[in-house]
Image 1 (cartoon, each protein chain N blue to C red):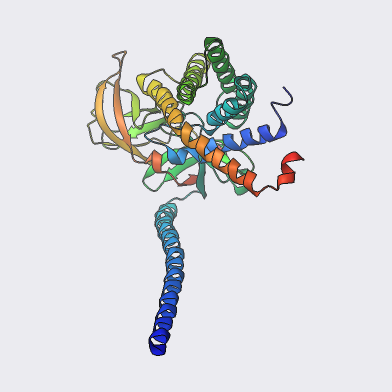
Image 2 (cartoon, rainbow over the protein chains, first blue to last red; image 1 turned 180 degrees about the vertical axis):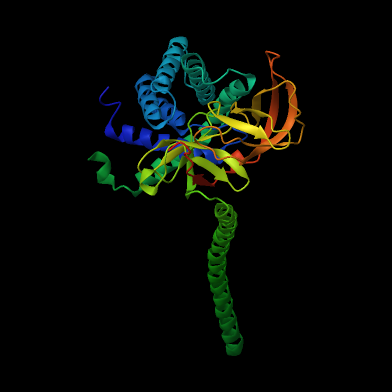
Length: 173
Length: 219
């Protein structure tokens, strides 16, 4: 747990949560948004193992609760539940193909947003479940999945550039 | 022969110089184009701020101009993060306006930033009155781009196209600020009241600056 949630990971999660609030709305299409935080979770899980999904979901949910305006705990609960559900369903599945990860990203985002919608509706009564908000949830899931290859390519490109600028001996230190 | 070689050398040098100067000019052109885009953006911002300033001049109360720096994390929540907080004079329940009318109210204030709840948020409720027929109701948001005016009397003589204004009831909004235009009228689900769809004046997807006004009548 300690190695998974290092200071660097916490800092990156915080950075991407802020990006979700400030940069992501600039790319909004008809109210649909993509989420840097979810892409960050999937990038880390894709490169470092599926087992990281749960602690990262907990961390991202907590940060979104702290920075967001909804009832405290709803984000964290939704993220952790979605991660648990997806993990339970996909226990025996081979997750080697990238296209399957894109589909998982769509499922995860839609599930998180639907859980948030349901918990907000039942716990606070602030919102009514309608076709419009459901379309927003699934549409944002689709948009996040579409953005996933671009996000992965951008991070890979940035990491490669960073690696090139390092000296050979730095890699072994 | 020597003359030809000298001429060729001269031509080559001249071609190289032209190539170099073309590259320099291209670089300058790129810089100038970037500057032009920046100036055009500044001009647009200037125009928006001028409109807001003109609008501010008509406001008798104390006002603060704020910039939008972020949005809520959930797509159906319609709240904005603003670049000013209590240190800049922003207070809870201040009304947030754009030059065309009401946009929402301040619902959370930090020292350096604050949050505004937009009219279209599912949590938002504003007491409204129609301009001509003077029918009163509650203007509510549902997360979509349109508003609904609820609890209108069944015999209210409201018409499509009529303007809805703030009624001044409550602690946040002064009387007479434009909210939107009625686009359709129907009975609500209980059948006891009328409900009217209202197209808001503010373009919520394009908000960049807001004017916050202080209006606390009971204090």
